[in-house]
Amino acid sequence: MKQLFTYFFVLILLLFSILSNISAQKLNHLKGTTFPKEIKEIKLYTEEGETVLFKKVLKELKGRVIYLDFWASWCGPCIREMPHSKNVQKYFKDENVAFLYLSTDVEKEKWLRGLKRINIKGSHYRIDPESKNLFKTLFKIPGIPYYAIIDKKGNIAIPKARWPREERLLEDITKILIDK
Image (tube, rainbow, N blue to C red; front, side, top):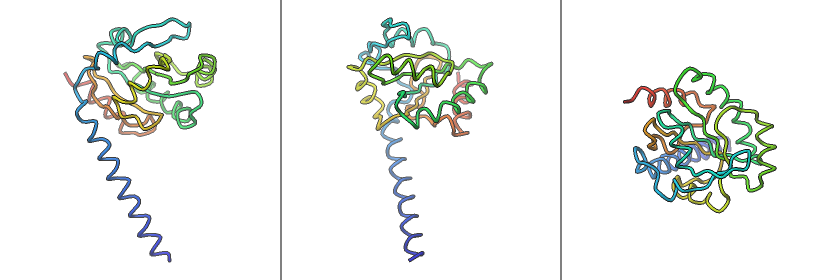
């Protein structure tokens, strides 16, 4: 019975590995591309309730590597990653790296309470609820948290980035920082 369990466990791990690679390969076509026009036109909301377009945020952060974090206040795994995200921020504090947090919260009040709870530096916006599926479709986002990295030119460098807790994320960001 123990041997059967071991074989089953190895089979599950192998299947998970294959599916993860297939998922990452599906996004390879996005590497080095700019955001489509309909994505750039997505409305985002600031903490003060102002509306800005995603393209304006990208323009403001151009010249910096952007670690893009899709999250929500109700998402347990998202909240658990925030301390790790703070550590990544500390690591790159003297570098040209921006942290862009895009919330999928529908209700402004819940988002604001979530922001207060996580207490993390960075650029914070709430995605217009009617537009969030555009991001989901572009990145083939199965759920949140979800991460991507944008290079200094505003192109998608890594469409499915590592989680903040993964040490290799530091290598990924560093590599993009030194790429011309």
